[in-house]
Image (cartoon, rainbow, N blue to C red):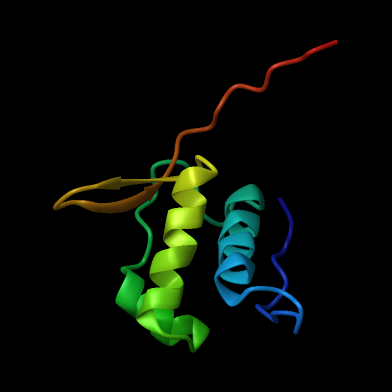
Length: 88
């Protein structure tokens, strides 16, 4: 488990993708454990200094990647670890 670098989006990168990548890095580093509840989207928007809809789109990206799950009325959580498959 390593330290996650501070959030610093690059100029050529879409902001919502940069946020999704940063949250994914926090998951990979063990800072956010499987099953952990994520900070609400509006609070994440303040934390990242972006519009709410930008964070919302980042959460859609993370859901599509299988990194998070949203349970209606409960919140958004880090997805359980997925077993890796070996093609070799």
